[in-house]
Amino acid sequence: MSAVNLARSGEEEATAGMASLLARQREAFLHAGAPDTRARKGGLRRLRAAILAHRNALNEAVSADFGHRSHYETEIMEIVVTVQAIDYLLRNTKRFMKPERRHVAISYKAGRAHVEYQPRGVVGVMAPWNYPFSLTMIPLATALAAGNRVMLKPSELTPRTSHVIREMLAGAFAPEEVAVVLGGPEVGAAFSGLAFDHLLFTGSTKVGRLVMKAASDNLVPLTLELGGKSPAIVGRGEVTPRTVKSIVFGKLANAGQTCIAPDYLLLHHDDLEAFVALFDATVGDAYPDGPTGKDYSSIVSDGHYDRLQDLIEGARKNGARIVEAGKNPGSAASRTRTIAPTLVIGAPDDSAIMEEEIFGPLLPVRTYSSIDEVIDFVNARPRPLALYYFGPEGADRAALLARTTSGNVGINNTLLHIAQDDLPFGGVGPSGMGAYHGIEGFRAMSHAKGVFVQGRWNFANLLRAPFGNLTDFAVRWVLGRARET
Ligand code: NAD
Image (cartoon, rainbow, N blue to C red; front, side, top):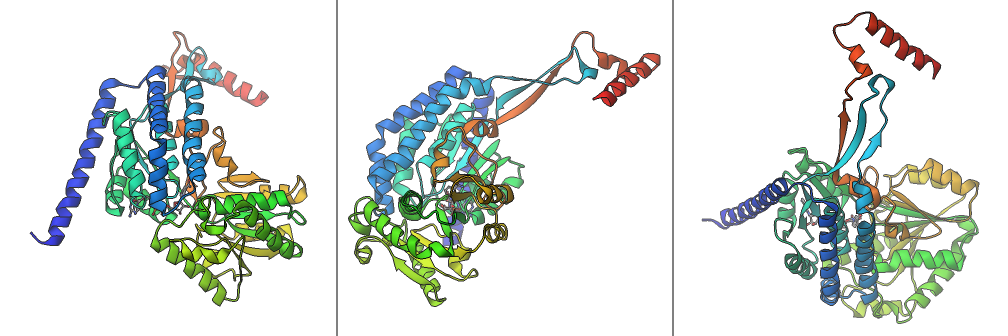
């Protein structure tokens, strides 16, 4: 057999293995039926305990995968947010599961209508590398709260973390409940073609398109959590220490490898130099040991490192002013795949850094003269995953919020909306489709089944054959009421 055929048969085997895993989970789901509140909470508690037991192993695996990842970043942005989300689901699952009484029109009175939230069955979860743990675990916890079985496909770019996830879940769940599939793009392509009852994909817009195509073969309902360029807008005169601290936090956490990091900054032109000075000082305070300090993370792969260097060089060639910020930025070169916090000022609107998602510690700054210019700039581009505004309540802020559309909005902060367990989290258009977290996540992974229960006597009886005088009366009565309302 040739090498190509061998590779193909390996792929086919992997696909067949995934398909049989799905069949096994579906059979178990159909056999056991929808789990009650107790069983769902039991699953969430097992997950919580397993996470706490693997905390150190996870921390080490994530850091090894990145080259270097701040221990605190992993604790806060992988483990704390996940445990917090699980605790929120433990407190709210019973309430989310309650059937909802619905309105019944006068013509159907005596009947009752309600919605039942039923588990969809088997949910597929595909995850990226940038927060390889929380972006796998929060969808998993949501799917379990909604009563589903789950197959997970973590990223191949963080292999050590993916292995810890697999071991951790194998110790806490039977494969019919939760199973982990490992592999790269080929496995991802096969995974996204499986006939799941729901598929949640987190990753790039480019791969999101492929996933949507693959899912369409089986009409699998999708939640797409994608990427894009999220703007941060600083109101005129609002370059304050509080504003800049928040931008530094959002841009440099995980060295900018955050889907909702402020991608670029829109700043009033009068405020530019004040911002540059304050950004430099604030980065210095936040990372006193410079980019090789323990709290500053590395770039995940050589490919991403080279891509970011190309963005800086491309902007430089296009006439942008490049400012490396904070303490001893030049030391970045001495640590593997580390890039110093860098401002890129005045890059042309059609340069790569202003058009592509950055996903690194580079912050392009563009100046504006009026809020209308800002609104037009944002609206001329794909709808972002997040939009940040710094400034007090007022006409500018109200106009910006009313006239732009983004997945979520942060006011006077960056990133923190993702940690609000009761807010839907998701994008819009090219930055995503659907949302999870909060009741929206539970509902995305549940089927809202409308049920109408006919009463013994029903006004609607008058609206069916044999038609006659009573039908005329009923039609006149209903339409007459409609006229009055
Ligand atoms: P990616 O799209 O390259 O990969 C995501 C997943 O898809 C991985 O598991 C990967 O193995 C799989 N995959 C790769 N090629 C595939 C293919 N051809 N068919 C099917 N699956 C395939 O994304 P990434 O580089 O891992 O993550 C970075 C991107 O994710 C950024 O664009 C970022 O904005 C986005 N992101 C979005 C969110 C969000 O919540 N909206 C969160 C984190 C990251």
